[in-house]
Length: 294
Image 1 (cartoon, helix red, strand yellow):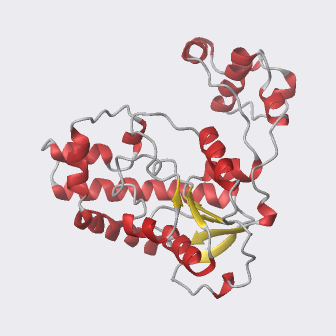
Image 2 (cartoon, one colour; image 1 turned 90 degrees about the vertical axis):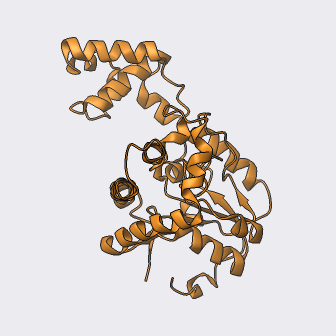
């Protein structure tokens, strides 16, 4: 990890944002900054909020949490839903304190909501989603375009089935066009121009090696026992079950795959997820400062 001389001149009140793909070392960087320059570390990872998978989701250790105050890690029951809207509300509560925030994670949507504002569109009822699916199956998604308000039609890609369905569902559910909702986006929680925004970057081959090595480190830390602790209450439909490797670990405990297959499947799935993260960061975070891992 490179030295932190670049951070010496940051005002103690300047928020620090650290984004990066999984296994990039962003949590370690956040801890170093907090220890040397002060601040409170806030989680921006959608899976690390769940309490039942500390090792698998690479949450900070209890030792690290004892060194520096950490917030929004492992505070949600694994069976409960947790939305970006809830996260923003909790972040706002933390920001009301006098501590400089160091917000770190790999969920790009969280950072987007934090610095661009979040449209608070009500959840789409399941019956409306099923209706949209049935309409598309029978007549194609093009049939929905004619029923979307013109303001929204002019703003979305009408050749994209997912965008069309989303716009139709919002209008059908709320009686208000999608673009109208977007125009009412509230002021963002943080002004990106007033933050130190870092995007951890690195060669893909090096990042892939870090992912591979991290699995073995997780095993040494007690990953198998953590999976056993989850076995009694395991439900693949629980939000925390989306953690990469959770399903594979349960399969291993049920003697459905070997330890070598477990390692291979988790490493592959993690690398695929990291690729999706890099794509998001490359397109959505072009203005962020790149910070290379040595």
